Image 1: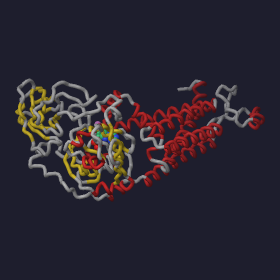
Image 2: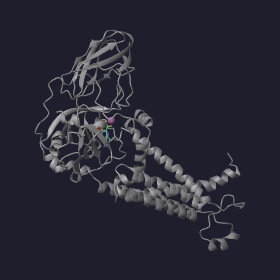
Image 3: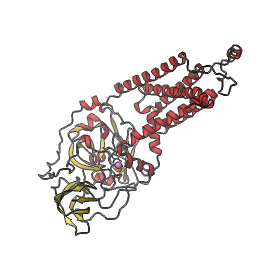
Image 4: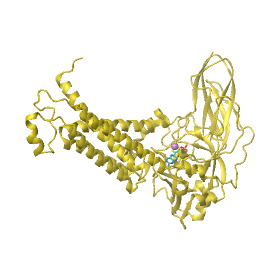
Length: 538
Ligand SMILES: Nc1nc2c(c(=O)[nH]1)N[C@H]1C(S)=C(S)[C@@H](COP(=O)(O)O)O[C@H]1N2
Ligand SMILES: [Mo]
């Protein structure tokens, strides 16, 4: 298809100009990656901007992202930011070809955005702006250089005088009255662009490598020797595990444990560098480090952790054996004031989580955990130390990468999720999930096990019932109870008749309360309703 003259001119001029912008952008990003290796890994604009987007994302959009992309929402976000940057850089390149100052203004806007992102993070650390500033300077310099070096030379008659008299003159615009513009892509230009692309790739690769060397926590984690618990978890009674194919195992392996957090990159804290400060409304501040914490008498407990964003029937729940130190002991040592009804835990990346002090002190096994299923905490699950409080949703209890606990009040402080529309206090609601059969399954005639898990942390599960279509509710068989803080498997053996069927379940906790049939969404404090599936028996 023949191109119109205008299209040909754009292809010959704006296309290459866009490439200038993209290369300048790539060099800027690479410079930031390199600089971040000397500041903090989390200081690259790719992370600070992404993090700011996460913190500012309206709640509805965030729920949509979690629902649609699951825990891949962060990858999707990074791809979206990358795509936006690419388009913006291309536009900047084209602008610069027409008016260099306009392109530079575009770089300036990116600079302001990245600097603002670096300083506005809750974990604001002054030096975080350095990569943003360096990226802006490199972007501006690269754009200026590439735009000038690849500008269409002026027609021969003008060259001598203007070029020497005004080296800063903007390049000829595509509207220049030049009937046959000289070819834009010259061998020199090609060398220049390849050089810029190569430099960006090298700088970014070396920067990443340096980041990995400087912030390598896997070595620190490998070196951790977990203490032998003074109070080991009581051995679960026989029969906590039912033998039904497709049923969730009682203990969730670390590799399969759900991950929910706002961290775009997993915070990297070496155990040797970790410190925790307990302060606020206390008589004596406590500061401890990893060696001191793990030298205290440790407890080991099975606790089922659940996310408030878990929809009915959803996957954001897991059960692990945690090893840690009783938080109540530390709080009593600190002399927490009776009026301090809220504990704010802060993570190294600025997350704040508010937990009722009463829940930590009421005798349940609230702990600062450093072990998970016999291993040091995995990095994604909060290495080196996190909080675990049986019975409360993760966003009000389970601070990962914890570095600070402040005793305060609910009136004085709103934790991260509270102004975002979630309840300040959120005990886990009684819930149950069918793991097998799957929704929409086609099943053979005969006896079919309907099995899953039910949970009512710290109250314990007393019963699970199953209903087929509109028939009476039937008692399911319960697995033995590990503790009231863990979920409990169940199975119901169903003599399936042919045809389409609806299956629903409901659980009753050990206070006698049955979960409500009323369907409410996850916000503001956890979903309710009966997990319901449809199957066809043939
Ligand atoms: N630092 C930090 N801790 C956090 C979060 C977070 O975003 N940042 N999310 C909380 C939420 S919402 C949940 S449900 C649990 C999830 O813990 P997991 O990822 O180990 O399953 O961590 C909690 N702790
Ligand atoms: Mo959560």
